[in-house]
Length: 298
Length: 267
Image (cartoon, rainbow over all chains, first blue to last red; front, side):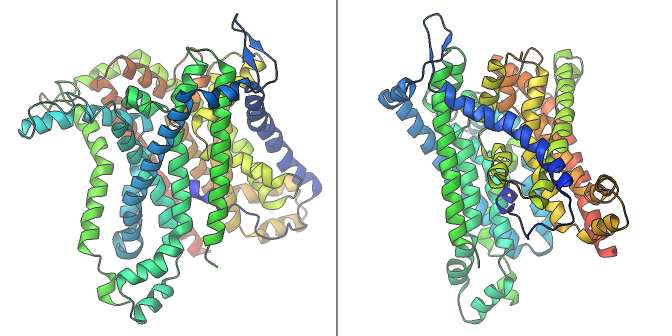
């Protein structure tokens, strides 16, 4: 469902069968709603990012770049930003490494089992995000399922401590959550490859590996880009998995934002940090859309 | 294609089995330990019991949070469909200044981390003096999920034969009548699909709710609150029940989809 948003372009020229009144009736209400509840809040976030907090903890409507210069000069923000990007990059890579071969197998070699296997990939998406993160916590903990099984099998004598409360746990959990999401657009892209191209490649004597490298892989790039963007952006902005499984070394940028809006009570600084995230995400979406167009099958 | 080409390479099948194992491991663990008398963790599981389910059914806080979640999800479905259906029609049929921006804005919450949607609305509510409650959560979910309604209905519109609507208009029906008697019934499968999807996504939503919640918890926030205090198999039990419920929803949705396809062949 999420990959479909990128193809929502108007198809043909608007027909004249719908009256002006009809068009306004369907256009004005959603336009107003989106203006008030999406556009206005984003602009408000931008406005907040220039304000500041007084000593008495009230918001001062003074317009300056003080928050942004704090973000640039204090190391903790840059380090956390880099760590979040690094965690998100690993999640993206692993999701693709798990999701792509699965999509390839389903699209080209699953035959009649295709729809059953497709359902099997989708089902984990219907299990609550929080519940899956929690399940990983029960698996990775000191007295967790994994450690106690290892000890039961006499593979280790002490519980392994690095499993939980580490960036490793966050990457593992987020990879688990975003693999089906990266699978979906890759699978859609593979399904759209005309089968006669692959037959032609095969008939012309290309091996399976050559066909994959020269025909299938290039044609699946738009799907890969869509899936990768999705996995990167959403794991980059995650704050629940780090809180639940990350420990002090797994803190991500959104955790800082949460604490600035909560205990630290510096909404303007939090707003400037979240506006930076918004800008970064929009930049990535723009870039991936450009690249997808370039790789699109014509 | 030759038979040899169709056969899947063995290493690829083996790899796929491993990926599926990875995807299902937490779910299997979750379900097994909901019956584990000795609590969460510890291998092998022992003292199989329904005790956690019994405890769950007496836990009023959980059930009132389930009720809150259902209220929020139903209201979110209402908002998202009421605005998403016209939005899809507008994108399909109308031209207006700022259409490209509008499309991007509507769809943005789907690809944006929930924290940004949640926080930006939190600032709006603060500036306008709106008190946080279930109503603010409903507004947040409804707004974020308009995207789902719009994409599903827009996809339905692409398959819709315009000739029926044209005939209806030619025969003197008003736009309003045509919408209710022709357009909407033809879109029913997209709309039901969107509704199921929005309902499930809203039931599970936590990042937006996290910032917009007042005193009454939704189910994910109730679970979140308990996780902060420690873990109990009661959470496994409630998660298992929700999982089975979600599976039922998928089956219904899938049945609807297949029926839609056979419908198409009969035309």
